[in-house]
Picture 1 (cartoon, rainbow, N blue to C red):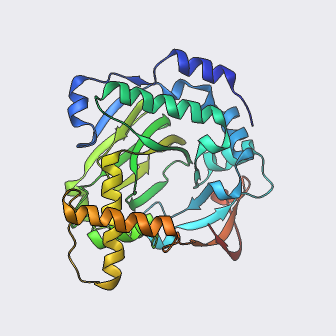
Picture 2: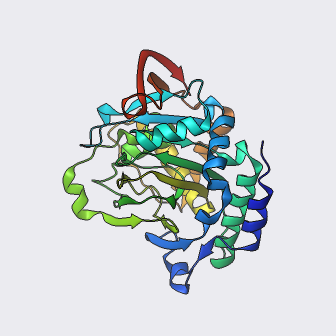
Length: 325
Protein backbone atom coordinates (compact mmCIF):
# COMPACT_ATOMS: atom_id res chain seq x y z
CA UNK A 1 0.00 0.00 0.00
CA UNK A 2 1.55 3.30 -1.08
CA UNK A 3 1.92 6.19 1.33
CA UNK A 4 1.78 9.15 -1.08
CA UNK A 5 3.20 11.38 1.65
CA UNK A 6 3.36 14.39 -0.67
CA UNK A 7 -0.41 14.17 -1.21
CA UNK A 8 -1.03 14.03 2.51
CA UNK A 9 1.08 17.14 3.11
CA UNK A 10 -0.55 19.07 0.27
CA UNK A 11 -4.13 18.30 1.22
CA UNK A 12 -3.53 19.01 4.92
CA UNK A 13 -2.04 22.39 4.08
CA UNK A 14 -4.80 23.43 1.65
CA UNK A 15 -8.55 23.16 2.12
CA UNK A 16 -10.39 21.04 -0.44
CA UNK A 17 -13.51 23.21 -0.54
CA UNK A 18 -13.37 26.58 -2.27
CA UNK A 19 -16.02 29.29 -2.34
CA UNK A 20 -18.38 27.89 0.32
CA UNK A 21 -20.76 30.76 1.08
CA UNK A 22 -23.38 31.41 3.82
CA UNK A 23 -26.20 30.62 1.38
CA UNK A 24 -24.81 27.11 0.97
CA UNK A 25 -25.50 26.44 4.66
CA UNK A 26 -29.23 26.94 4.09
CA UNK A 27 -29.16 24.92 0.85
CA UNK A 28 -27.02 22.02 2.13
CA UNK A 29 -28.90 18.73 1.98
CA UNK A 30 -32.14 20.38 0.87
CA UNK A 31 -31.34 21.52 -2.66
CA UNK A 32 -28.82 20.67 -5.36
CA UNK A 33 -25.68 22.73 -4.86
CA UNK A 34 -22.56 23.05 -7.00
CA UNK A 35 -19.29 24.12 -5.40
CA UNK A 36 -15.67 24.70 -6.32
CA UNK A 37 -13.00 22.37 -4.95
CA UNK A 38 -9.26 21.67 -5.15
CA UNK A 39 -9.40 17.89 -5.10
CA UNK A 40 -8.14 17.71 -8.67
CA UNK A 41 -4.84 19.24 -7.53
CA UNK A 42 -3.98 16.21 -5.38
CA UNK A 43 -1.29 13.85 -6.73
CA UNK A 44 -3.46 11.01 -5.43
CA UNK A 45 -5.33 11.35 -8.75
CA UNK A 46 -2.35 11.48 -11.12
CA UNK A 47 -2.02 8.79 -13.80
CA UNK A 48 0.75 7.13 -11.82
CA UNK A 49 -1.28 7.06 -8.61
CA UNK A 50 -4.38 5.75 -10.42
CA UNK A 51 -2.40 3.01 -12.17
CA UNK A 52 -1.03 1.83 -8.81
CA UNK A 53 -4.49 2.02 -7.26
CA UNK A 54 -5.97 -0.17 -10.02
CA UNK A 55 -3.21 -2.75 -9.52
CA UNK A 56 -3.80 -2.91 -5.74
CA UNK A 57 -7.59 -3.08 -5.88
CA UNK A 58 -9.06 -6.54 -5.11
CA UNK A 59 -11.79 -7.99 -7.33
CA UNK A 60 -14.41 -7.35 -4.65
CA UNK A 61 -13.75 -3.61 -4.80
CA UNK A 62 -14.21 -2.80 -8.48
CA UNK A 63 -16.84 -2.89 -11.23
CA UNK A 64 -16.03 -2.48 -14.90
CA UNK A 65 -18.77 -2.02 -17.48
CA UNK A 66 -19.51 -1.15 -21.08
CA UNK A 67 -22.79 0.01 -22.57
CA UNK A 68 -24.54 1.52 -25.59
CA UNK A 69 -23.75 5.24 -25.73
CA UNK A 70 -26.30 6.10 -28.44
CA UNK A 71 -29.43 5.42 -26.37
CA UNK A 72 -30.62 4.91 -22.80
CA UNK A 73 -30.94 1.13 -22.86
CA UNK A 74 -30.05 -0.68 -19.62
CA UNK A 75 -30.21 -4.01 -21.47
CA UNK A 76 -26.85 -3.12 -23.05
CA UNK A 77 -25.11 -2.66 -19.67
CA UNK A 78 -22.42 -5.38 -19.53
CA UNK A 79 -20.12 -6.56 -16.75
CA UNK A 80 -16.45 -7.21 -17.31
CA UNK A 81 -13.16 -8.03 -15.59
CA UNK A 82 -9.56 -6.89 -15.53
CA UNK A 83 -7.26 -9.89 -16.09
CA UNK A 84 -3.45 -9.87 -16.33
CA UNK A 85 -3.16 -6.14 -17.03
CA UNK A 86 -1.13 -3.40 -15.40
CA UNK A 87 -2.75 -0.16 -14.32
CA UNK A 88 -1.21 1.78 -17.22
CA UNK A 89 -2.73 -0.70 -19.70
CA UNK A 90 -6.15 -0.36 -18.07
CA UNK A 91 -6.00 3.42 -18.26
CA UNK A 92 -5.03 3.20 -21.94
CA UNK A 93 -7.96 0.89 -22.68
CA UNK A 94 -10.34 3.32 -20.97
CA UNK A 95 -8.85 6.34 -22.73
CA UNK A 96 -9.32 4.73 -26.17
CA UNK A 97 -12.39 2.60 -25.51
CA UNK A 98 -15.93 2.57 -24.15
CA UNK A 99 -15.41 1.56 -20.55
CA UNK A 100 -16.66 2.67 -17.14
CA UNK A 101 -14.49 1.60 -14.18
CA UNK A 102 -15.62 2.05 -10.59
CA UNK A 103 -13.13 1.48 -7.76
CA UNK A 104 -15.05 1.40 -4.49
CA UNK A 105 -14.06 2.34 -0.94
CA UNK A 106 -10.65 3.81 -1.72
CA UNK A 107 -10.16 4.44 1.99
CA UNK A 108 -9.90 0.66 2.50
CA UNK A 109 -7.36 0.24 -0.30
CA UNK A 110 -4.98 3.06 0.73
CA UNK A 111 -5.04 5.03 3.98
CA UNK A 112 -4.01 8.22 2.17
CA UNK A 113 -7.45 8.37 0.55
CA UNK A 114 -9.05 7.71 3.92
CA UNK A 115 -7.21 10.64 5.47
CA UNK A 116 -8.24 12.85 2.57
CA UNK A 117 -11.87 11.71 2.92
CA UNK A 118 -11.96 12.45 6.64
CA UNK A 119 -10.58 15.93 6.00
CA UNK A 120 -13.18 16.65 3.31
CA UNK A 121 -16.11 15.93 5.62
CA UNK A 122 -14.36 17.77 8.42
CA UNK A 123 -14.47 20.86 6.23
CA UNK A 124 -18.21 20.48 5.60
CA UNK A 125 -18.85 20.03 9.32
CA UNK A 126 -16.83 23.17 10.05
CA UNK A 127 -18.89 25.14 7.52
CA UNK A 128 -22.40 23.87 8.35
CA UNK A 129 -23.42 24.45 11.99
CA UNK A 130 -24.60 21.28 13.71
CA UNK A 131 -23.65 18.98 10.83
CA UNK A 132 -22.32 15.60 11.92
CA UNK A 133 -21.58 12.98 9.29
CA UNK A 134 -20.55 9.33 9.51
CA UNK A 135 -20.09 6.17 7.39
CA UNK A 136 -17.91 7.99 4.88
CA UNK A 137 -16.83 6.20 1.71
CA UNK A 138 -14.93 7.36 -1.37
CA UNK A 139 -14.98 5.77 -4.82
CA UNK A 140 -13.40 6.77 -8.11
CA UNK A 141 -14.93 6.63 -11.57
CA UNK A 142 -12.56 6.40 -14.55
CA UNK A 143 -14.54 6.42 -17.80
CA UNK A 144 -14.12 6.70 -21.54
CA UNK A 145 -15.14 9.56 -23.83
CA UNK A 146 -18.88 9.54 -24.51
CA UNK A 147 -19.70 6.92 -21.87
CA UNK A 148 -22.93 7.33 -19.91
CA UNK A 149 -24.20 6.20 -16.54
CA UNK A 150 -27.86 5.27 -16.80
CA UNK A 151 -30.68 6.71 -14.71
CA UNK A 152 -30.41 5.50 -11.10
CA UNK A 153 -30.71 6.45 -7.43
CA UNK A 154 -28.44 5.77 -4.45
CA UNK A 155 -29.26 5.01 -0.82
CA UNK A 156 -26.72 7.22 1.08
CA UNK A 157 -25.95 10.90 0.72
CA UNK A 158 -23.92 11.37 -2.48
CA UNK A 159 -21.50 13.97 -3.84
CA UNK A 160 -19.78 13.93 -7.24
CA UNK A 161 -16.38 15.62 -7.62
CA UNK A 162 -14.90 16.20 -11.08
CA UNK A 163 -11.15 15.60 -11.37
CA UNK A 164 -10.49 15.44 -15.12
CA UNK A 165 -12.57 15.84 -18.27
CA UNK A 166 -16.11 17.18 -18.54
CA UNK A 167 -19.50 15.57 -18.07
CA UNK A 168 -23.15 16.57 -18.03
CA UNK A 169 -25.17 15.57 -14.97
CA UNK A 170 -28.98 15.38 -14.95
CA UNK A 171 -30.55 15.45 -11.46
CA UNK A 172 -34.25 14.64 -11.06
CA UNK A 173 -36.74 15.17 -8.20
CA UNK A 174 -36.53 12.44 -5.51
CA UNK A 175 -40.24 11.61 -5.61
CA UNK A 176 -42.86 10.04 -7.86
CA UNK A 177 -43.10 9.60 -10.78
CA UNK A 178 -39.32 9.96 -11.05
CA UNK A 179 -38.68 7.74 -8.03
CA UNK A 180 -41.47 5.25 -7.20
CA UNK A 181 -41.55 4.59 -3.48
CA UNK A 182 -41.62 0.80 -3.82
CA UNK A 183 -38.59 0.81 -6.14
CA UNK A 184 -36.60 3.00 -3.72
CA UNK A 185 -37.41 0.55 -0.95
CA UNK A 186 -36.15 -2.39 -3.02
CA UNK A 187 -32.92 -0.51 -3.81
CA UNK A 188 -32.38 0.18 -0.10
CA UNK A 189 -33.11 -3.45 0.79
CA UNK A 190 -30.54 -4.51 -1.81
CA UNK A 191 -33.08 -6.53 -3.79
CA UNK A 192 -32.52 -4.70 -7.09
CA UNK A 193 -29.72 -2.80 -8.83
CA UNK A 194 -29.65 1.00 -8.65
CA UNK A 195 -30.12 1.27 -12.43
CA UNK A 196 -33.36 -0.71 -12.27
CA UNK A 197 -35.37 2.54 -12.25
CA UNK A 198 -37.53 3.16 -15.30
CA UNK A 199 -36.56 6.21 -17.35
CA UNK A 200 -38.74 8.23 -19.71
CA UNK A 201 -37.22 10.86 -22.05
CA UNK A 202 -39.74 13.48 -20.83
CA UNK A 203 -38.15 13.27 -17.37
CA UNK A 204 -35.42 15.56 -18.76
CA UNK A 205 -37.92 18.45 -18.83
CA UNK A 206 -37.86 18.37 -15.02
CA UNK A 207 -34.14 17.78 -14.49
CA UNK A 208 -31.51 20.14 -13.14
CA UNK A 209 -28.69 20.02 -15.70
CA UNK A 210 -25.11 20.73 -14.64
CA UNK A 211 -21.88 20.63 -16.61
CA UNK A 212 -19.01 19.51 -14.40
CA UNK A 213 -15.42 20.45 -15.17
CA UNK A 214 -12.28 19.84 -13.08
CA UNK A 215 -12.56 21.71 -9.80
CA UNK A 216 -16.37 21.55 -9.60
CA UNK A 217 -18.57 19.24 -7.53
CA UNK A 218 -22.29 18.72 -7.00
CA UNK A 219 -24.33 17.51 -4.02
CA UNK A 220 -27.98 16.63 -4.58
CA UNK A 221 -30.80 15.87 -2.09
CA UNK A 222 -30.99 12.33 -0.73
CA UNK A 223 -32.06 9.63 -3.23
CA UNK A 224 -32.36 12.07 -6.16
CA UNK A 225 -32.31 10.01 -9.38
CA UNK A 226 -29.58 11.10 -11.76
CA UNK A 227 -27.82 10.14 -14.95
CA UNK A 228 -24.49 11.20 -16.45
CA UNK A 229 -23.13 11.67 -19.97
CA UNK A 230 -19.41 12.17 -20.59
CA UNK A 231 -18.22 14.72 -23.09
CA UNK A 232 -15.77 13.53 -25.76
CA UNK A 233 -12.86 13.13 -23.34
CA UNK A 234 -11.52 10.82 -20.66
CA UNK A 235 -13.32 11.48 -17.38
CA UNK A 236 -12.09 10.98 -13.84
CA UNK A 237 -14.51 11.69 -11.01
CA UNK A 238 -14.72 10.95 -7.31
CA UNK A 239 -17.92 10.05 -5.51
CA UNK A 240 -18.31 10.33 -1.76
CA UNK A 241 -20.99 8.77 0.43
CA UNK A 242 -22.09 9.76 3.90
CA UNK A 243 -24.90 9.62 6.40
CA UNK A 244 -26.19 12.03 9.00
CA UNK A 245 -28.70 11.17 11.72
CA UNK A 246 -31.43 12.61 9.49
CA UNK A 247 -30.32 10.64 6.43
CA UNK A 248 -30.03 7.49 8.54
CA UNK A 249 -33.58 7.93 9.82
CA UNK A 250 -34.90 8.30 6.27
CA UNK A 251 -32.97 5.19 5.28
CA UNK A 252 -34.40 3.18 8.19
CA UNK A 253 -37.99 4.25 7.47
CA UNK A 254 -37.68 3.21 3.82
CA UNK A 255 -35.98 -0.03 4.86
CA UNK A 256 -38.86 -0.85 7.23
CA UNK A 257 -41.43 0.16 4.62
CA UNK A 258 -39.82 -2.27 2.19
CA UNK A 259 -40.12 -5.07 4.73
CA UNK A 260 -43.79 -4.22 5.34
CA UNK A 261 -44.47 -4.13 1.59
CA UNK A 262 -43.49 -7.78 1.35
CA UNK A 263 -46.58 -8.52 3.44
CA UNK A 264 -48.82 -5.82 1.91
CA UNK A 265 -47.54 -5.25 -1.66
CA UNK A 266 -50.11 -2.57 -2.52
CA UNK A 267 -49.77 -0.67 0.76
CA UNK A 268 -49.03 3.04 0.94
CA UNK A 269 -46.58 3.55 3.78
CA UNK A 270 -45.68 6.88 5.33
CA UNK A 271 -42.12 8.12 4.86
CA UNK A 272 -42.37 10.43 7.89
CA UNK A 273 -39.31 10.28 10.16
CA UNK A 274 -40.97 11.53 13.35
CA UNK A 275 -43.77 10.28 15.58
CA UNK A 276 -44.68 6.86 17.04
CA UNK A 277 -44.99 5.13 13.64
CA UNK A 278 -41.49 6.25 12.66
CA UNK A 279 -40.04 5.10 15.99
CA UNK A 280 -41.62 1.68 15.45
CA UNK A 281 -40.03 1.50 12.00
CA UNK A 282 -36.63 2.48 13.42
CA UNK A 283 -36.97 -0.43 15.85
CA UNK A 284 -38.10 -2.89 13.18
CA UNK A 285 -35.27 -2.00 10.81
CA UNK A 286 -32.74 -2.06 13.64
CA UNK A 287 -33.82 -5.49 14.86
CA UNK A 288 -33.85 -7.02 11.38
CA UNK A 289 -30.41 -5.63 10.54
CA UNK A 290 -28.89 -6.50 13.94
CA UNK A 291 -30.19 -10.06 14.01
CA UNK A 292 -29.44 -10.86 10.38
CA UNK A 293 -33.05 -11.80 9.63
CA UNK A 294 -32.64 -9.97 6.33
CA UNK A 295 -29.16 -10.81 5.10
CA UNK A 296 -27.73 -8.52 2.39
CA UNK A 297 -28.54 -10.13 -0.92
CA UNK A 298 -25.60 -11.39 -2.94
CA UNK A 299 -25.76 -9.85 -6.39
CA UNK A 300 -25.33 -12.05 -9.42
CA UNK A 301 -23.37 -10.58 -12.31
CA UNK A 302 -22.66 -12.20 -15.66
CA UNK A 303 -19.16 -11.28 -16.78
CA UNK A 304 -18.80 -11.51 -20.55
CA UNK A 305 -15.81 -9.33 -21.44
CA UNK A 306 -12.24 -8.57 -20.39
CA UNK A 307 -10.62 -5.16 -20.59
CA UNK A 308 -8.13 -5.23 -23.48
CA UNK A 309 -6.23 -2.13 -24.67
CA UNK A 310 -5.73 -3.77 -28.10
CA UNK A 311 -9.39 -4.69 -28.70
CA UNK A 312 -12.04 -2.59 -30.37
CA UNK A 313 -13.43 -0.15 -27.77
CA UNK A 314 -11.12 -1.76 -25.18
CA UNK A 315 -13.48 -4.72 -24.78
CA UNK A 316 -12.67 -8.37 -25.57
CA UNK A 317 -15.65 -10.76 -25.49
CA UNK A 318 -15.19 -13.90 -23.38
CA UNK A 319 -17.48 -16.84 -22.54
CA UNK A 320 -20.01 -15.64 -19.94
CA UNK A 321 -19.49 -16.63 -16.33
CA UNK A 322 -21.48 -15.83 -13.20
CA UNK A 323 -19.92 -14.04 -10.22
CA UNK A 324 -21.37 -13.00 -6.86
CA UNK A 325 -20.65 -9.69 -5.16
